[in-house]
Image 1 (cartoon, rainbow, N blue to C red):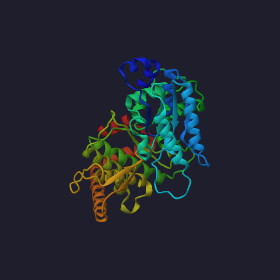
Image 2: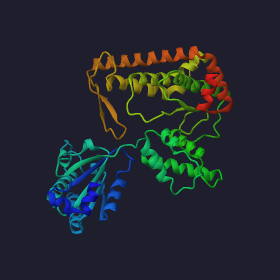
Image 3: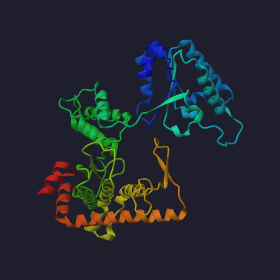
Image 4: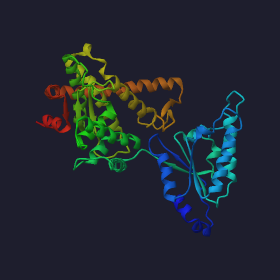
Length: 429
């Protein structure tokens, strides 16, 4: 808004002696609308908009990239006031002299030219540089100093209200049945980016067409959320009765453990219809509200819920007949237990010491251990301990509620997909 206002009324700022911020760097995960925001700013300000991708500057011949930068700024100065947008700026803005071999300093020259141009142009003229990246930590410090990109605007994943608003925007051009509740869809899509939400609305419309209807219904939207999260239903998958039974007990195991621990999210749907992602069934849990923080107890409960599937298999079919179906649960549980100890400082032995550093937080956030080898051994044993305790807890919960486990699993086998309401009804009677 500030940039738009400045481009509309530069005199107001000049009267006080304030200078326009030269560059605004938009950072955030992919699909959150950084490029979209830059276009919107140019559209609102009603000024010319130059858009170029960082990789377009990278040439085979040394000096070509730098020449392109000069050209770009020359055009921008002629057309001022205007907005120049460089997408994926990390292609040319990476830290210099990273000890790379080879004589091609093309990228460095391009960056140096960009730095010189940004210093050189007149702040009063009204050329604003916008840039987008999802790897802010790899950028050269000279690029981020005040006077170049002075503003960093984080474009994060949308929250609950944001998701609802985005869904409604994308649904404008789509014929909907009356009485669609966007709140339910927004709650079910925690952690989805704007691009994914657009995709969900489109999938729902495609599903309505496939089934020969004229408008999109609530069930289309709910099914498309699942398609995006877990893959489409595999109608033709042949699953033997025995395996179906195992999957049913496995999923009810998750759901029962979740429901019996008061701090877990309520179960919204359980299904044993195979999916294209390879899942033979899954339990969908949706939090009531948007949550930014997780307590230690909630994490432990979550780990116990992850182990519930395998625990149910052990209880019903015996230790020797446990299956590979829990591989994803095991991965998730281990990840959570590890993060508790290395990043969230939730273990007695290490207290509040960070033993892990996260790189590329917007692109998957890989973590690497930053500790001595024997500390790593201790961490491993604590992770094992944490998961073991949670597994025991899950087993105990299921042992105490064995009749309900049988009843629910039988019902799920018959229906294939049950809602959270049906689940709670059987559980409470």
